[in-house]
Amino acid sequence: MAGRLHLGTQGFAFDDWVGPFYPADTPKAAYLERYAEHFATVEIDSTFYGTPRPSVVRGWYDRTPAGFLFAAKFPRTITHDKKLVGVEAEVDEFIDAMLGLQGKLAVLTLQFAYDFEPGQLALELGCGTGIFLEKAARSGARVVGLDLSMDLLAKAHARLVGVPNVVLVRGNAERVPCPDATFDAVYGSSVLHHLDLDRALAEVLRVLRPGGRCVFTEPNILNPQVALMFRLGLTKKYFGVSPDEMAFSRFRALRALRGAGFAEAAVVPFDFLHPATPSGLCDVVDRAGRVFERVPFLREVTGSFVVVGRRPVA
Image (tube, rainbow, N blue to C red; front, side, top):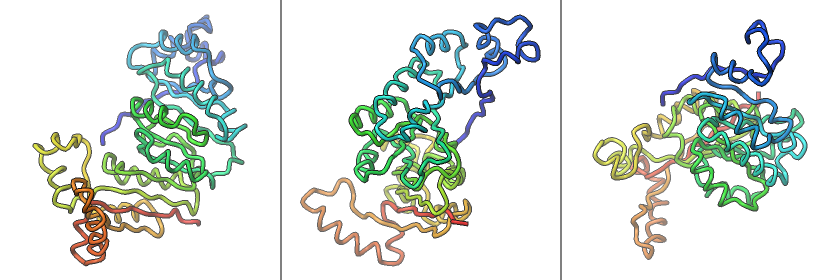
């Protein structure tokens, strides 16, 4: 998947930039406008110290040209003081305020303290409408849901009202806006085939703490129907397959895991249960499928596979 590099700085409101960067006598109120003449993106660091007033956010929007992008840090109350525990109200307040940037909002960043307990934290890539986040939250772990679509995140937010141990973040799974070695587990369902596989797994390895594990389920390109869905242009539209996604085989997934540096890398075929199976036959087909999953050659055409890896401890 092709990407675009946006070059900017952390903050723009620095008085000592007047002269070297901003024209002499530039008033503080005009810093952002002058900044936007040279850069197309900026990280707002001040949000780390508190949620900005909606009028301030609207001012950022109004004072920058079309196409300008903002990144912003979650307030430290959420990440450092409460460490994601019982922060639903604060998260809602912050996200509601930052949505005032509309299409200029690029990403919201979680910056954790060094004493944060990453062993209790999981990340879902491509969380979508939050179906699996809801299930993962029942484990008691603190879970971060990452997705690029604001529309899907809005639906996830509505689903997860009242779930205090889930935080939603807009961001790119190939450039996760989190520090190295943050998460104990990273997981996702049918997300890797939307991404550059090697780049995405390298990023997963980066954000996993030593000994942390990843697990993903993906469609199997060796399955005849999956191949038909992804390989033929006429069927892509019918099955809702977007132009940028392409399923892959378990052999490709295993090479990518090992190439990224994962230990205990494994890709296991599963699932002969077709979605169109009549409900009365599901148990029978499922039991038969579990047998077929252990048969050499036949197991290579399952509908899906599980991708598992562990970040080396040393």
